[in-house]
Length: 438
Image 1 (tube, one colour):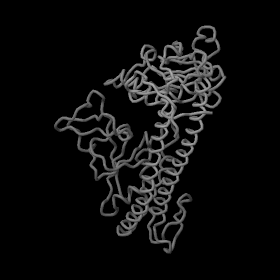
Image 2 (cartoon, one colour):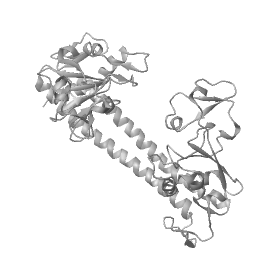
Image 3 (cartoon, one colour):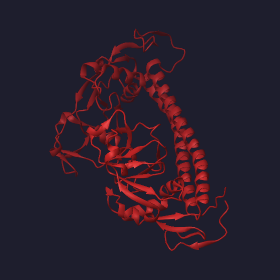
Image 4 (cartoon, helix red, strand yellow):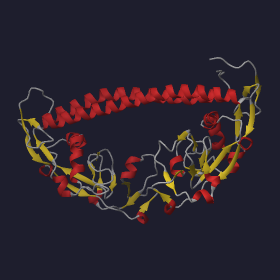
Protein backbone atom coordinates (compact mmCIF):
# COMPACT_ATOMS: atom_id res chain seq x y z
CA UNK A 1 0.00 0.00 0.00
CA UNK A 2 1.06 3.60 -0.62
CA UNK A 3 3.15 5.52 1.92
CA UNK A 4 3.22 9.27 2.57
CA UNK A 5 5.72 11.36 0.59
CA UNK A 6 7.79 12.61 3.53
CA UNK A 7 8.40 11.41 7.08
CA UNK A 8 10.05 12.83 10.20
CA UNK A 9 11.34 11.43 13.45
CA UNK A 10 8.55 11.49 16.04
CA UNK A 11 11.09 11.78 18.85
CA UNK A 12 9.52 8.75 20.49
CA UNK A 13 11.51 5.53 20.20
CA UNK A 14 8.59 3.09 20.14
CA UNK A 15 6.76 5.08 17.44
CA UNK A 16 9.65 5.90 15.12
CA UNK A 17 8.92 7.97 12.03
CA UNK A 18 5.57 9.63 11.32
CA UNK A 19 4.30 11.60 8.30
CA UNK A 20 5.96 15.00 8.14
CA UNK A 21 2.68 16.93 8.55
CA UNK A 22 1.44 14.90 11.56
CA UNK A 23 1.74 16.05 15.17
CA UNK A 24 2.58 14.31 18.44
CA UNK A 25 0.27 15.50 21.20
CA UNK A 26 -0.31 14.53 24.80
CA UNK A 27 -3.75 13.29 25.79
CA UNK A 28 -4.15 16.35 27.99
CA UNK A 29 -3.97 18.59 24.92
CA UNK A 30 -6.91 16.84 23.26
CA UNK A 31 -9.19 15.95 26.20
CA UNK A 32 -10.60 17.42 29.37
CA UNK A 33 -11.30 14.99 32.22
CA UNK A 34 -13.89 14.30 34.90
CA UNK A 35 -15.12 11.38 37.01
CA UNK A 36 -18.18 9.24 36.46
CA UNK A 37 -21.11 9.51 38.85
CA UNK A 38 -21.00 7.28 41.98
CA UNK A 39 -24.38 5.66 41.36
CA UNK A 40 -25.67 3.21 43.97
CA UNK A 41 -28.01 0.26 43.40
CA UNK A 42 -30.80 2.30 44.96
CA UNK A 43 -30.35 4.95 42.26
CA UNK A 44 -30.91 2.51 39.38
CA UNK A 45 -34.30 2.53 37.71
CA UNK A 46 -36.19 0.47 35.12
CA UNK A 47 -36.70 3.65 33.14
CA UNK A 48 -34.84 6.94 32.98
CA UNK A 49 -31.44 8.02 31.66
CA UNK A 50 -29.14 5.19 30.48
CA UNK A 51 -25.97 4.66 32.51
CA UNK A 52 -22.78 3.10 31.14
CA UNK A 53 -20.73 1.90 34.09
CA UNK A 54 -17.61 -0.10 34.86
CA UNK A 55 -19.38 -3.37 34.03
CA UNK A 56 -20.27 -2.31 30.49
CA UNK A 57 -16.74 -1.05 29.77
CA UNK A 58 -14.68 -3.76 31.43
CA UNK A 59 -12.64 -5.93 29.03
CA UNK A 60 -13.96 -4.21 25.90
CA UNK A 61 -11.78 -2.26 23.51
CA UNK A 62 -13.23 0.20 21.05
CA UNK A 63 -16.72 -0.72 22.21
CA UNK A 64 -19.29 1.76 20.91
CA UNK A 65 -22.14 2.35 23.32
CA UNK A 66 -25.49 3.09 21.74
CA UNK A 67 -28.21 3.29 24.43
CA UNK A 68 -30.84 2.50 21.81
CA UNK A 69 -29.17 -0.86 21.11
CA UNK A 70 -27.54 -1.88 24.38
CA UNK A 71 -29.33 -2.89 27.56
CA UNK A 72 -27.82 -0.32 29.92
CA UNK A 73 -28.90 0.38 33.47
CA UNK A 74 -30.92 3.56 33.98
CA UNK A 75 -30.83 6.31 36.59
CA UNK A 76 -33.49 8.75 37.69
CA UNK A 77 -33.54 12.17 36.05
CA UNK A 78 -32.90 13.84 39.42
CA UNK A 79 -29.21 13.24 38.73
CA UNK A 80 -29.35 15.81 35.95
CA UNK A 81 -29.45 18.51 38.60
CA UNK A 82 -26.64 17.05 40.71
CA UNK A 83 -23.99 15.95 38.22
CA UNK A 84 -24.22 17.29 34.67
CA UNK A 85 -20.48 16.65 34.23
CA UNK A 86 -21.23 12.93 34.15
CA UNK A 87 -23.73 13.31 31.31
CA UNK A 88 -22.12 12.13 28.08
CA UNK A 89 -22.43 13.46 24.54
CA UNK A 90 -21.70 11.66 21.28
CA UNK A 91 -17.93 11.15 20.97
CA UNK A 92 -17.14 11.31 24.70
CA UNK A 93 -14.80 8.56 25.90
CA UNK A 94 -15.24 6.59 29.10
CA UNK A 95 -12.44 4.52 30.66
CA UNK A 96 -12.82 1.82 33.31
CA UNK A 97 -10.45 2.99 36.03
CA UNK A 98 -9.43 -0.54 37.07
CA UNK A 99 -8.71 -3.66 35.07
CA UNK A 100 -7.13 -7.11 35.36
CA UNK A 101 -6.08 -6.90 31.71
CA UNK A 102 -2.63 -5.29 31.71
CA UNK A 103 -2.33 -6.19 28.03
CA UNK A 104 -5.05 -3.69 27.26
CA UNK A 105 -5.38 0.06 27.00
CA UNK A 106 -7.34 0.65 30.17
CA UNK A 107 -10.63 -0.60 28.83
CA UNK A 108 -12.59 2.15 27.13
CA UNK A 109 -15.72 2.91 25.20
CA UNK A 110 -17.10 5.92 23.39
CA UNK A 111 -20.67 7.06 23.06
CA UNK A 112 -21.98 6.62 19.53
CA UNK A 113 -25.44 8.06 20.05
CA UNK A 114 -27.20 11.36 20.67
CA UNK A 115 -29.24 9.84 23.52
CA UNK A 116 -28.18 11.49 26.84
CA UNK A 117 -26.22 8.91 28.84
CA UNK A 118 -24.56 8.96 32.26
CA UNK A 119 -21.08 7.67 33.04
CA UNK A 120 -21.33 5.62 36.21
CA UNK A 121 -19.17 4.36 39.04
CA UNK A 122 -15.41 3.68 38.66
CA UNK A 123 -15.12 5.50 35.33
CA UNK A 124 -13.06 8.38 33.94
CA UNK A 125 -14.63 10.61 31.30
CA UNK A 126 -12.35 12.01 28.59
CA UNK A 127 -14.20 14.75 26.71
CA UNK A 128 -12.47 15.73 23.46
CA UNK A 129 -11.84 19.32 22.59
CA UNK A 130 -13.20 20.71 19.32
CA UNK A 131 -11.46 20.02 16.04
CA UNK A 132 -10.72 16.30 16.42
CA UNK A 133 -12.59 13.33 14.95
CA UNK A 134 -13.65 11.03 17.80
CA UNK A 135 -13.74 7.97 15.54
CA UNK A 136 -10.10 8.49 14.58
CA UNK A 137 -9.22 8.92 18.26
CA UNK A 138 -11.11 5.72 19.06
CA UNK A 139 -9.00 3.77 16.57
CA UNK A 140 -5.78 5.25 17.97
CA UNK A 141 -6.77 4.40 21.55
CA UNK A 142 -7.55 0.87 20.37
CA UNK A 143 -4.10 0.52 18.77
CA UNK A 144 -1.12 -1.47 20.01
CA UNK A 145 0.83 1.78 20.28
CA UNK A 146 -1.57 3.28 22.79
CA UNK A 147 -1.88 0.03 24.75
CA UNK A 148 1.91 -0.19 25.00
CA UNK A 149 1.96 3.16 26.75
CA UNK A 150 -0.51 1.99 29.38
CA UNK A 151 1.26 -1.36 29.74
CA UNK A 152 4.57 0.38 30.45
CA UNK A 153 2.94 2.31 33.30
CA UNK A 154 1.58 -0.80 35.03
CA UNK A 155 4.32 -3.36 34.32
CA UNK A 156 4.33 -6.17 36.88
CA UNK A 157 0.91 -5.24 38.31
CA UNK A 158 -2.01 -7.65 37.86
CA UNK A 159 -4.83 -5.28 38.81
CA UNK A 160 -4.10 -1.65 38.07
CA UNK A 161 -5.82 1.68 38.21
CA UNK A 162 -5.79 3.81 35.10
CA UNK A 163 -5.64 7.28 36.54
CA UNK A 164 -6.18 10.67 34.97
CA UNK A 165 -2.45 11.24 35.45
CA UNK A 166 -1.60 8.20 33.29
CA UNK A 167 -4.05 9.26 30.59
CA UNK A 168 -2.96 12.90 30.53
CA UNK A 169 0.68 12.11 29.78
CA UNK A 170 -0.11 9.45 27.15
CA UNK A 171 0.83 10.28 23.55
CA UNK A 172 -1.58 10.56 20.59
CA UNK A 173 -0.56 10.92 16.95
CA UNK A 174 -2.66 13.48 15.10
CA UNK A 175 -3.02 13.96 11.35
CA UNK A 176 -2.80 17.69 10.72
CA UNK A 177 -6.42 18.34 9.72
CA UNK A 178 -9.83 17.09 10.84
CA UNK A 179 -10.46 16.20 7.18
CA UNK A 180 -7.55 13.74 7.16
CA UNK A 181 -8.62 12.29 10.53
CA UNK A 182 -12.11 11.74 9.10
CA UNK A 183 -10.70 10.09 5.97
CA UNK A 184 -8.68 7.67 8.13
CA UNK A 185 -11.72 6.92 10.32
CA UNK A 186 -13.87 6.26 7.24
CA UNK A 187 -11.23 3.96 5.77
CA UNK A 188 -10.87 1.97 8.99
CA UNK A 189 -14.64 1.83 9.45
CA UNK A 190 -14.91 0.22 6.04
CA UNK A 191 -11.93 -2.13 6.30
CA UNK A 192 -12.60 -3.30 9.87
CA UNK A 193 -16.27 -3.90 8.97
CA UNK A 194 -15.12 -6.16 6.11
CA UNK A 195 -12.75 -8.05 8.42
CA UNK A 196 -15.35 -8.27 11.19
CA UNK A 197 -17.86 -9.70 8.72
CA UNK A 198 -15.34 -12.34 7.65
CA UNK A 199 -14.61 -13.21 11.27
CA UNK A 200 -18.34 -13.43 12.04
CA UNK A 201 -18.81 -15.77 9.07
CA UNK A 202 -16.01 -18.01 10.33
CA UNK A 203 -17.44 -18.01 13.86
CA UNK A 204 -20.83 -19.05 12.47
CA UNK A 205 -19.03 -21.85 10.63
CA UNK A 206 -17.49 -22.99 13.93
CA UNK A 207 -20.97 -23.07 15.45
CA UNK A 208 -22.18 -25.24 12.57
CA UNK A 209 -19.26 -27.62 13.06
CA UNK A 210 -20.10 -27.92 16.77
CA UNK A 211 -23.73 -28.58 15.88
CA UNK A 212 -22.58 -31.27 13.46
CA UNK A 213 -20.56 -32.97 16.22
CA UNK A 214 -23.58 -32.81 18.53
CA UNK A 215 -25.79 -34.40 15.85
CA UNK A 216 -23.27 -37.22 15.33
CA UNK A 217 -23.13 -37.98 19.05
CA UNK A 218 -26.92 -37.76 19.46
CA UNK A 219 -27.54 -40.16 16.58
CA UNK A 220 -24.85 -42.66 17.57
CA UNK A 221 -25.71 -43.01 21.27
CA UNK A 222 -29.49 -43.14 20.85
CA UNK A 223 -29.92 -44.85 17.45
CA UNK A 224 -26.67 -46.73 16.90
CA UNK A 225 -24.52 -46.55 13.77
CA UNK A 226 -26.05 -49.33 11.65
CA UNK A 227 -28.72 -47.75 9.41
CA UNK A 228 -30.12 -51.19 8.47
CA UNK A 229 -30.79 -52.50 11.98
CA UNK A 230 -34.49 -53.10 12.90
CA UNK A 231 -35.90 -50.44 15.24
CA UNK A 232 -38.54 -50.36 18.00
CA UNK A 233 -40.35 -47.67 19.95
CA UNK A 234 -38.46 -46.66 23.11
CA UNK A 235 -41.69 -45.62 24.81
CA UNK A 236 -40.26 -42.14 25.39
CA UNK A 237 -41.48 -39.44 23.02
CA UNK A 238 -38.28 -37.37 22.93
CA UNK A 239 -36.14 -40.46 22.30
CA UNK A 240 -38.29 -42.02 19.63
CA UNK A 241 -37.12 -45.33 18.17
CA UNK A 242 -34.07 -47.29 19.31
CA UNK A 243 -32.44 -50.42 17.84
CA UNK A 244 -34.61 -53.49 18.41
CA UNK A 245 -31.89 -55.44 20.22
CA UNK A 246 -31.19 -52.64 22.73
CA UNK A 247 -32.76 -53.18 26.15
CA UNK A 248 -34.39 -50.04 27.51
CA UNK A 249 -33.36 -49.30 31.10
CA UNK A 250 -32.54 -46.50 33.54
CA UNK A 251 -29.09 -45.25 34.38
CA UNK A 252 -29.44 -46.48 37.97
CA UNK A 253 -29.04 -50.02 36.58
CA UNK A 254 -25.38 -49.41 35.71
CA UNK A 255 -24.11 -46.89 38.27
CA UNK A 256 -24.23 -45.21 41.64
CA UNK A 257 -23.19 -41.63 42.33
CA UNK A 258 -21.14 -39.93 45.03
CA UNK A 259 -21.60 -36.24 45.76
CA UNK A 260 -18.56 -34.04 46.35
CA UNK A 261 -17.74 -31.89 49.33
CA UNK A 262 -17.95 -28.14 49.98
CA UNK A 263 -14.56 -27.35 51.56
CA UNK A 264 -14.44 -24.13 53.67
CA UNK A 265 -12.17 -21.44 52.22
CA UNK A 266 -9.95 -21.45 55.31
CA UNK A 267 -9.12 -25.13 54.66
CA UNK A 268 -8.06 -24.60 51.04
CA UNK A 269 -4.35 -24.25 50.28
CA UNK A 270 -2.97 -21.92 47.62
CA UNK A 271 0.22 -23.97 47.19
CA UNK A 272 0.50 -27.72 46.86
CA UNK A 273 1.89 -29.59 49.87
CA UNK A 274 2.65 -33.26 50.43
CA UNK A 275 -0.62 -35.13 50.82
CA UNK A 276 -2.65 -32.33 49.16
CA UNK A 277 -4.75 -32.75 46.02
CA UNK A 278 -6.18 -30.15 43.63
CA UNK A 279 -9.69 -28.93 44.43
CA UNK A 280 -11.93 -29.49 41.39
CA UNK A 281 -14.67 -26.85 41.10
CA UNK A 282 -16.86 -25.51 38.30
CA UNK A 283 -14.69 -22.40 38.34
CA UNK A 284 -11.42 -24.33 38.05
CA UNK A 285 -12.85 -26.30 35.09
CA UNK A 286 -14.03 -23.15 33.31
CA UNK A 287 -10.86 -21.13 34.08
CA UNK A 288 -7.90 -23.48 33.59
CA UNK A 289 -5.38 -20.61 33.71
CA UNK A 290 -6.45 -19.39 37.15
CA UNK A 291 -4.47 -20.22 40.28
CA UNK A 292 -5.24 -23.65 41.69
CA UNK A 293 -6.47 -24.53 45.21
CA UNK A 294 -5.54 -27.69 47.13
CA UNK A 295 -7.03 -29.82 49.89
CA UNK A 296 -4.79 -31.56 52.44
CA UNK A 297 -5.49 -35.21 53.34
CA UNK A 298 -9.01 -35.37 51.82
CA UNK A 299 -11.50 -38.16 52.50
CA UNK A 300 -11.27 -41.05 50.05
CA UNK A 301 -14.87 -40.79 48.86
CA UNK A 302 -14.38 -37.28 47.40
CA UNK A 303 -11.28 -38.11 45.36
CA UNK A 304 -11.57 -38.60 41.60
CA UNK A 305 -9.03 -39.89 39.07
CA UNK A 306 -8.62 -39.34 35.33
CA UNK A 307 -10.39 -42.65 34.78
CA UNK A 308 -13.58 -41.37 36.44
CA UNK A 309 -16.54 -39.42 35.08
CA UNK A 310 -17.84 -36.37 36.94
CA UNK A 311 -21.28 -34.89 36.32
CA UNK A 312 -21.98 -31.24 37.14
CA UNK A 313 -25.15 -31.31 39.20
CA UNK A 314 -25.45 -27.52 39.65
CA UNK A 315 -23.63 -24.50 38.25
CA UNK A 316 -23.19 -26.24 34.87
CA UNK A 317 -25.94 -28.81 35.28
CA UNK A 318 -25.77 -31.82 32.97
CA UNK A 319 -22.16 -31.38 31.79
CA UNK A 320 -20.02 -34.56 32.02
CA UNK A 321 -16.31 -34.07 32.74
CA UNK A 322 -13.40 -36.47 32.30
CA UNK A 323 -9.60 -36.34 32.53
CA UNK A 324 -9.44 -34.48 35.86
CA UNK A 325 -8.09 -35.68 39.17
CA UNK A 326 -8.27 -34.33 42.70
CA UNK A 327 -10.93 -33.54 45.29
CA UNK A 328 -14.29 -32.78 43.70
CA UNK A 329 -16.65 -30.07 44.91
CA UNK A 330 -20.21 -30.47 46.13
CA UNK A 331 -21.42 -29.26 42.72
CA UNK A 332 -20.41 -32.59 41.18
CA UNK A 333 -21.47 -36.21 41.20
CA UNK A 334 -18.82 -38.86 40.67
CA UNK A 335 -20.39 -41.66 38.62
CA UNK A 336 -19.36 -45.12 39.87
CA UNK A 337 -20.40 -47.13 36.82
CA UNK A 338 -20.31 -50.90 36.28
CA UNK A 339 -17.27 -51.30 34.05
CA UNK A 340 -18.33 -54.84 33.18
CA UNK A 341 -21.50 -53.52 31.54
CA UNK A 342 -20.53 -50.19 30.05
CA UNK A 343 -17.47 -48.60 28.50
CA UNK A 344 -16.37 -45.33 30.08
CA UNK A 345 -16.27 -43.36 26.81
CA UNK A 346 -19.67 -44.66 25.68
CA UNK A 347 -21.18 -43.47 28.95
CA UNK A 348 -19.36 -40.14 28.57
CA UNK A 349 -20.66 -39.58 25.03
CA UNK A 350 -24.13 -40.70 26.11
CA UNK A 351 -24.16 -38.09 28.90
CA UNK A 352 -22.67 -35.53 26.52
CA UNK A 353 -25.62 -35.96 24.14
CA UNK A 354 -27.68 -32.78 23.95
CA UNK A 355 -30.86 -34.85 24.28
CA UNK A 356 -29.71 -36.24 27.62
CA UNK A 357 -28.53 -32.84 28.81
CA UNK A 358 -31.95 -31.35 28.00
CA UNK A 359 -33.58 -34.15 29.97
CA UNK A 360 -31.28 -33.58 32.96
CA UNK A 361 -31.99 -29.84 32.95
CA UNK A 362 -35.71 -30.61 32.86
CA UNK A 363 -35.63 -32.95 35.86
CA UNK A 364 -33.19 -30.70 37.76
CA UNK A 365 -36.02 -28.32 38.54
CA UNK A 366 -37.07 -24.78 37.68
CA UNK A 367 -35.20 -22.83 40.34
CA UNK A 368 -32.86 -19.98 39.37
CA UNK A 369 -29.94 -22.44 39.27
CA UNK A 370 -30.94 -26.01 38.29
CA UNK A 371 -29.90 -28.53 40.95
CA UNK A 372 -29.78 -32.19 39.93
CA UNK A 373 -30.51 -34.63 42.77
CA UNK A 374 -29.66 -38.34 43.02
CA UNK A 375 -33.14 -39.61 42.23
CA UNK A 376 -33.56 -37.42 39.16
CA UNK A 377 -30.21 -38.56 37.77
CA UNK A 378 -30.97 -42.23 38.43
CA UNK A 379 -34.20 -41.88 36.43
CA UNK A 380 -32.28 -40.98 33.24
CA UNK A 381 -33.07 -43.40 30.37
CA UNK A 382 -30.28 -45.77 29.35
CA UNK A 383 -29.80 -48.78 27.05
CA UNK A 384 -28.18 -52.12 27.66
CA UNK A 385 -26.30 -53.85 24.82
CA UNK A 386 -22.96 -55.55 24.20
CA UNK A 387 -19.70 -53.71 24.91
CA UNK A 388 -18.37 -54.65 21.47
CA UNK A 389 -21.10 -52.48 19.92
CA UNK A 390 -20.39 -49.74 22.43
CA UNK A 391 -16.74 -49.74 21.29
CA UNK A 392 -17.82 -49.55 17.66
CA UNK A 393 -19.94 -46.50 18.50
CA UNK A 394 -17.04 -44.91 20.40
CA UNK A 395 -14.69 -45.43 17.44
CA UNK A 396 -17.25 -44.02 15.00
CA UNK A 397 -17.88 -40.90 17.10
CA UNK A 398 -14.17 -40.22 17.60
CA UNK A 399 -13.30 -40.73 13.93
CA UNK A 400 -16.08 -38.45 12.73
CA UNK A 401 -15.41 -35.80 15.37
CA UNK A 402 -11.66 -35.87 14.62
CA UNK A 403 -12.45 -34.95 11.00
CA UNK A 404 -14.58 -32.03 12.16
CA UNK A 405 -11.99 -30.97 14.77
CA UNK A 406 -9.42 -30.70 11.99
CA UNK A 407 -11.72 -28.25 10.21
CA UNK A 408 -12.34 -26.38 13.48
CA UNK A 409 -8.59 -26.01 14.06
CA UNK A 410 -8.09 -24.63 10.56
CA UNK A 411 -10.94 -22.12 10.90
CA UNK A 412 -9.78 -21.09 14.39
CA UNK A 413 -6.31 -20.33 13.02
CA UNK A 414 -7.88 -18.28 10.23
CA UNK A 415 -9.90 -16.28 12.78
CA UNK A 416 -6.69 -15.64 14.74
CA UNK A 417 -4.94 -14.45 11.57
CA UNK A 418 -7.83 -12.17 10.62
CA UNK A 419 -7.88 -10.72 14.14
CA UNK A 420 -4.13 -10.19 14.00
CA UNK A 421 -4.47 -8.53 10.58
CA UNK A 422 -7.20 -6.22 11.90
CA UNK A 423 -4.96 -5.13 14.78
CA UNK A 424 -1.97 -4.63 12.49
CA UNK A 425 -4.00 -2.64 9.97
CA UNK A 426 -5.26 -0.21 12.62
CA UNK A 427 -1.71 0.19 13.92
CA UNK A 428 -0.23 0.83 10.47
CA UNK A 429 -2.89 3.41 9.59
CA UNK A 430 -2.95 5.43 12.85
CA UNK A 431 0.86 5.65 12.91
CA UNK A 432 1.02 6.84 9.30
CA UNK A 433 2.79 3.80 7.84
CA UNK A 434 -0.03 3.54 5.29
CA UNK A 435 -1.33 6.58 3.40
CA UNK A 436 -5.08 7.09 3.47
CA UNK A 437 -6.88 9.62 1.29
CA UNK A 438 -10.52 10.31 0.54
